[in-house]
Each structure stands twice: as structure tokens, then as C-alpha cells.
Image 1 (cartoon, rainbow, N blue to C red):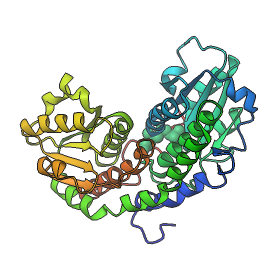
Image 2: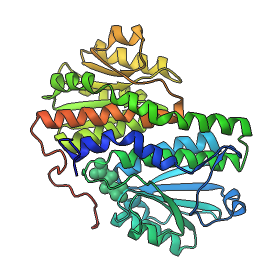
Image 3: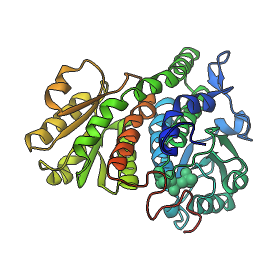
Length: 365
Ligand code: M6R
């Protein structure tokens, strides 16, 4: 039921502190400063011998795969490639032994993700699922995997499943890292940072009022750009997808530095850009990009840390996000963007939970 919310999407956005808690429940092992998973069905030896990881999925799940790429690289130092499941299934890429394939999916029924996993499994590779729906086709087809425990996601636009996928990928990164070079102490630090996530997401939800004002101001835009770098690049893609999906406004996500290679030509006084610009690595560079957009007359909405006069002096609108470590930023920073698309869609009279032309799970090719 809607439990007092106007739409499932809004309810699911607000459930995120809890769904993230559920994704982590019983999976953080303080004694060994690592993560534990019941269903990987592989021995620590087999997991330790993994030399490459392929992450595959569609849509929002593909975006969490991109987040996973940064996390696994960063925390576990294992080479990762991210593939659209629809492309992977018909390609014939050389895949080395000791490659592990993860299919990422909320529904567990996405035809392309299922086919990509079956194809890699047929070739003899180990395939695991990161999945929300228990007993779904993909959960059954994989050799093992990790459930999200996010509870049913009804809104067609994926929200809580996405943040839970990112959270599971962070825990997997910790786990793989601890099988290799990550020290006990660093493992503990990562665990502590993960434990702070539900509260940080709760804090991010408090930006709802600010977001509503921004939504009112930009509801009539016909194109919106989303820009971010490193951990915030997939967030830019996900913010843009959410907006397209439910408000039918054209939106594009880019790594902020790519802007000057083409998309900046779109910038004019009617084309707002959303910059995801928390303090941290590449902050100064993204700042320079923001100034470039401003100089060309483009309205700027910044998602930034609190008390940042520099951002405030340039951006037309600022949405505050709590300051968290890099690898947890995707989970926190996507929340205001989910809310932004929700409020804009609502103002435009769109059917938020059931956008046109879309189904909750895409079981055909
Ligand atoms: O159930 P899945 O995670 O496999 O679904 C994949 C995509 O169809 C899905 O994420 C889609 O992009 C959403 N509607 C995005 O909000």
C-alpha cells in the first residue's frame, strides 16, 4: 500500500534509509573487517583467484554497474568492465578464465540480462546475480548471488533498488579487497563509512523542500544536462534517465569534462545544467566546468556540500547534500535527483508511477 504517500515512487524514495539498512543487515563482519554473503556459492579460494569482473545489466541497473566499476577498481583493485546486457548477449568477447560475471537486476526478469548471463554461463564462466526479486528467472539461472532485500519496487522508475545495488557492490568491493590487499584497519574504516549511509541518505531526503523550488523553476525546460565526474558520473546518467523516464523532458548525463567536446553547444539560457559537485577529487575541475556553463548563460543547479560560498556564488540554485566519502557518494547524491524528477513530473501532470511506453520489467528483447 502507499502508506500515506501520493505515489509508489515517492514512497520508495523515502524508504531508502531502511532499504539500505536491509541490504547491509547481517553482511558486515566487524571481527574480520569484511563483508559476508551467504549465497555466492564459491569458495574464498575461487573468489581470490578472480582476475577480472564483468558487470552487466540494463537501464538503471547498468548505471549501478558503472558505480560498481569505480568501487571495485578503487577498493579491490580488480579490473572491471561494464557491459550493456543487450550488447553482451550478441557479442563474442574473449573472456579469460578467472573472470566472474555479475548480472545486476531489480526484477530478475529482464530478457537481455537473463540471456547475457545464460550465454556467459554456457561458455563455462561463473555467473552471479545481484537481484531484488527472490526466486526470479535470473536468480535461478545464476550460479549464486546476492539479494538486495529492498522489498517490492512498484514504481516503474527504479529508485530504492538502485541504491541497494550500489550498496551491495560496495560490500562486494570490500569483500574482494579484504581477500587481497585491504588491511584490517582499512576494512574497519570502510565498514564504518557504510554504516553511516542510512543516516546520510535520511539527511539527503531533507532537501525535498529545496528540490521542490528548483522543480517549479525548471519544470518547462525542454533539455536538461546532468554533469558529474568520477563517482558522480554514473549519478549524472541516472539523474538524466529519471527525468526522461517520468517527465518526458530530454536530458543527458555526461562526465563533466566531456562537456567541452560537444554538449556545451546545447547550453543557452533555456537549458539548465545540474552539476553534481561535492567537495573531493576533481572538485576544482568541475567548478571550472560550471563556470564555463555560467559564462555561456546557462542556468546552473548545483548539488553541493553545505557551506560552500564558492559554489553558491556561481550556481543559480544549490541543493545541499551531506558530505560523505567518495565511494558512498553515488548512494547519497542520487536521492535529490530522484526527488527532482519526481517533482518535475508531478508539476507537468505526468503519471509518475506508470510512465508512457514503459513497463516495470522488460521481458522481451
Ligand atoms: O529489473 P531490471 O533492473 O533488470 O530492469 C532494468 C531496466 O529495465 C530498468 O532499470 C529501467 O531502466 C528502469 N525503468 C529505470 O528506472
